[in-house]
Image (cartoon, rainbow, N blue to C red; front, side, top):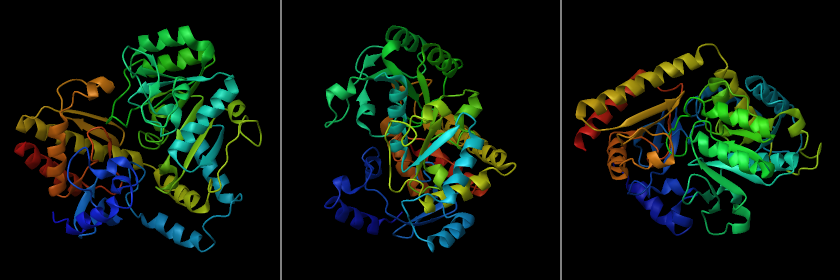
Length: 427
C-alpha cells in the first residue's frame, strides 16, 4: 500500500499533538511504522488519504456495529442537524433512547446519559461510593475502564494488591483506594472481599475483557462475583462499554445470565458519536443529582445528534435475526482464521464473544492479563503489517479486540482469510 500522504500528515501532526495523535494506540508504536490517516468510510471499508481501501475490523474501536455511514443513521442525522446540534436542555430524544436502553437491559431501571465511556465508569463509581458510604473499589488486572485517576493503577506483585499509580499525575493517596485482582481468580477475589468488605464500595469489571484482546470469563467466575457482592452489600458494576450490544443485544449480562447492580455503556448507543451512559437499580440511581446528593453533570449529555444516531442504531439492531446474521459471519471468520493458522503451522489462540474477537500468537490458554502477555508481540506486529499491506485493517496492538459489523460480507471474510493465509505463511 502506498501511504505517502499519511506519512506527510503524520510528520505535521507530531509537531502539533503529543505523538501526533489524540489517543495513544493510534500512533502505531506497538506495531511499528506510521499510522494511516483516514479520509472516509462506508460499510465494512475505510479509505485512507492516499485512496487505499481496507476491510475494517477496528470499527472505531467497536461502536460501528452497523458498519460505517449506515444510510438510516446518516439520513436521520442530516434531518436532525438542521434543528441544531446542542441545546443544553432536555429533548424528547433522550426519553426515547433511555426507554430503548432500559428495555434491552432489565438491570437498568434508571439511566443517565454522558459523553464517553470514561465519564460513565467514573460516574458509576462515584455513585456506588455515595450509596454505600465506602471508599475502596475492586478492579481486575487488564480491564480498562477509562483514564480516571483511580482506575489507572497496576497490580504489582502478589495475587491481589492495593493499587499504585500506573501513570504520572495520579496521586498515590487516590490510587491506594483501588484494589487490583487477576481476572478469573475466584480465590483471590473471595479472600479480598471477606477481609475488606466493610471498606469496598463496588466491584467494576469488563465481563469479557476487551482491552487485553478478548478474554472470556471462566465458568462460575461472574456468578461468584454476583453472589459475593450481594452478600456483602457491594455494588457490582458491569463495564459494558465494549460488550454492550456486542456480545448480544442485551450485552454480556444477558449472554451470561448475570444481573449487575449498575451498567456502563459506550459509543455504540450513539451510533459511534461521542456518548456514554450509566444506569442501574432505582435506589442506587436515585442518589444522582438533582434527585440525590451525588453530583454529576455535562453540557453535551443527551445531545440530539448522539441520541438520534443511537435511536436509529438500536432500531436496526433490535430487528429479528440481526444477531443471528452477525454470529454466522463471526463464526465463518473464526473458522477461517483458525484453519489457516493450522495449515501454515503458526501457533495461535482465537477467542470471541459475540461479535468481538482476538487472535493471540501463543500456544498458552489465555485466561487473564498474565497469560495474554505470553503472546509473541513481534510476530503479531509482522502479522499486522502484512494484513495491512493486503488491505485488512486490524487494531494496531495485540492487546485490542477486533469487531465485525452487519456490513461485513462473506466476500470480505474470504478476502480476510486469504490475506491471513498469505501473511501467516510469510511469518
